[in-house]
Image (tube, rainbow, N blue to C red):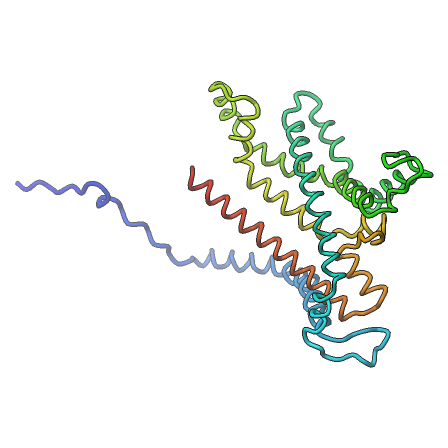
Length: 312
């Protein structure tokens, strides 16, 4: 009597079932989903896609409202004029200074605020509400509040001297602008980091505590690596927002004392000089810079996530 051969090991594994074709019901549901999403897609394309394409088209023309008869196709000349201008690069530097310092300070303070909100034993609701109040204030109102607070005659802040206007020098102007941005948007950073802290298992922290790890070791060895994706997302959102800063600078200095940013430059060229072609080129370059920043952060986020998955 022959014994039946029993396959062992990987040979016994069943082949993965193939994906079958969609049923009529599944096709109907998918078609319904497309039809439901179509209006929103059309509206988004009209609201965002058309202005972008129209700005790109304008940037390829010489279009100055002061000389409407001189409107003509100039190709990439507008971009060459902007990129060869020292004003553009100075404004890029100013924007970078505000972006780097404000985002770095917000990250540190936001992490501290998030830890306080996450570990609050009592009054957690009122604490979170009080911390989030600055983020709920309109940016223009916050800019005016800080501007008037530092005025030597009407303000109550005399850090730079009772009779000294902080907006009379470039360094002091940057300090006030960055302080305004930090005060206004640190709660936003804290809110995003708080979502990341909620995903850290308490059991893991307790186990590390039992093994003798102190608070700093638990934070840097466990909490920080686990919330790294949340940190990158928070930094990405704030960097994109800070690079397009307009309201605070426009209200407090209007670009005076060499504090002009790229958004202020685009406003001055488009609105004050009514040079539509050149201003559109500035706007497109800002858009390209924002896309480049988003791509760099996304690549970093993807690499970090893949590395963490590989380690686990």
